[in-house]
Amino acid sequence: MGSRKARPTNEGGSTGSGCHYGVRVSEFVLRNVRIVGLGDGPGWAGPVDVVVEQDAVQNIGHGVEKPLGIEEYDADGRWLIPGLWDQHVHLAQWTAVGQRLDLSGSESPEHVVVRVRDHLAGHAGPLVGFGHRLGTWRTEPTVAALDAVAPDVPVVLIAGDAHHAWLNSRALPPREGVVAENEWYDAYTRIELVLEPDLSPAAYRRTLERAAALGITGVVDLERGQTPADWEQRESPVRVRVATYADGLDATVAAGLRTGDRLPGSPELVTMGPLKIISDGSLNTRTAWCCQEYADGSGVGAPNQSSAELAGLLGLAHDHGLEVATHAIGDLALQEALAAYDVAGAVGSIEHAQLVTREEVATMARLGLRASMQPAHLLDDRDVTELIWPDRAERCFAFRWMLDAGVTLALGSDAPVSPLDPWLAVAAAVHRSADDRPPWHPEQALTPREAIASSVDGHGSVHAGMPADLVLLEADPLQDDGDSGDQASRLRTMPVTATFVAGRLVAGGI
Ligand SMILES: [Zn+2]
Image 1 (cartoon, rainbow, N blue to C red):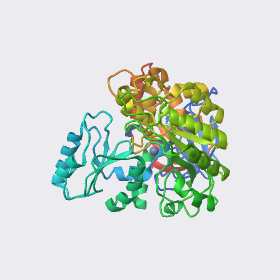
Image 2 (cartoon, protein in one colour):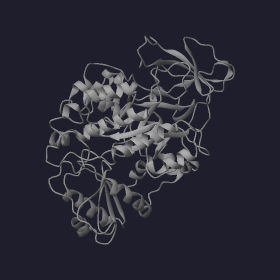
Image 3 (cartoon, rainbow, N blue to C red):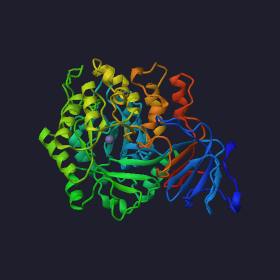
């Protein structure tokens, strides 16, 4: 895409040395840019000029006058959207995943064991793997099988949905099968200490720079086991909303931190996020809490806390100015969560909302709760859903129902469960297929416009008065030839020219 480099126009004696990452250029005019229409209004027909001053978009129009002393760039007719957000990220795990053995696509426990054996033949332990999914496996993973190929070094294999891990005896003695849900979450923090992924400020920065290069200007970090003080050491090129879990709620309340407050001592782009609650399990682990039994006879799943505990947490958070992000994958978990939000008057989001009823969607709309959903999960969960929830597949990833009911959709990745890539999420929402098969329940698909509008933190089209979190694209993301597969593959590989946060270039260049 280097053939169409935008260039400074050098009018008014500006030196026009170009705008490069690391240089603080927060005031400029971007000429000749197409505003991608994401809202309901008529929008701008042709290329316009956009004036950025004081970290915000100040003016948009044709042939606008350049304020004195600021830079000017020619966007050469490229397309402009608000900065993209990933509303559900586990930043530490995503940073660590880049340092782990990739076990995605493993077809069986035996396949995983072979990959572990091969890896250990060339590397000294300990070994951390990531990405296997046991949803469609026909045999059970056993500790004995791992011990046979790794008797001496700790081996920890974290599932692709992060809800369980398969460990050998050296990592966590002694048991027969996998470690799931709360037991796994408790173990995770201890295991992290032993395995020491590089979670230095530099490693975080690299992770966030990779995200910025894809057009990300903000993430909601739902990582477990961190405190606001951890962010004092870190730098971030993008906005970060940092969640707390129940175990950090008292300290958050004592510090007087409310959702949206800047974290004391942290970079200015880092703010307090929501309280995160994981109210039930996951589909693959068969722990998502459902109204009806799973088709394979594995029960109805289970809640991770009592209704009273859930209501108590929501009430406490809401009374102290915190939004709440509640994980609910099964429809019964969602029903319980909605009842608790209703009683507490709490605000925020339902995370995943993977299996819903129309009645629940209407309740979400009435309560003003966002649906924080991860479209790429449907690519991974399609087959296992048909296997264990065949009677309810049409109620999964119900994006269309959400928009029809007036629920605000907020897309994300749940990285590391799927990659931190907003274009993968948008493409999956539009096409609902990862392969040659036709889209899965296409009646629930979004248009490219709806999918992108659900990824910009509610800003709609770029407009005067919004923060200058902006993404310049090489191609028209709304190009429509009527084929959702073609649209999805174009969106999946959308070339990003430049990403600005608060008017500052953080990735790419013009
Ligand atoms: Zn998550």
